[in-house]
Image 1: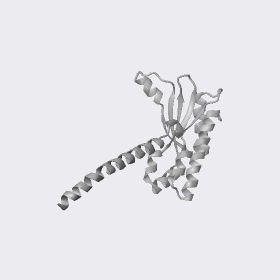
Image 2: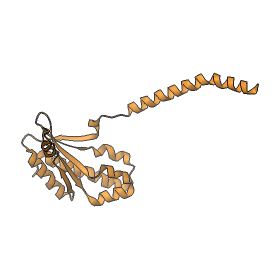
Image 3: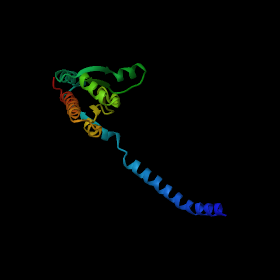
Image 4: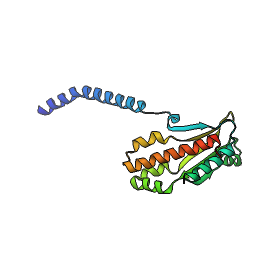
Length: 174
């Protein structure tokens, strides 16, 4: 008799539990969709000045990086690879810069930083022939990294140096 009573009470609570779960799932979905961001909100993008060639932009970035003690660790001529495959594209080059000491300190603090290494700047030619420099906007990533003050300072230095390298490229500061 008691088990029938418990079963009846449980069945009476089922619609309440179902409603609660439905509300919880709806709120979770709303919260998740409210947190999505556009990919363009995660990048820093600079057009090349009208009088700056793409080759001059690359040379300017390399010179600035050298002056800032940032090493060019890789250069990927993606458009040349596409051309070899018979695919037409505008110019696409990816330039990877790194300060190895700072990179090591970040990795010692949290190995997840490996996903952000090395710092990349892409030179792309859009469908209208306009050249752009594009990189991850470190200004949006750094605040959420929960870094101790001494690493925060270094992360901000990396951000500033990457922006300086891009600015030199965009302006053709040879």
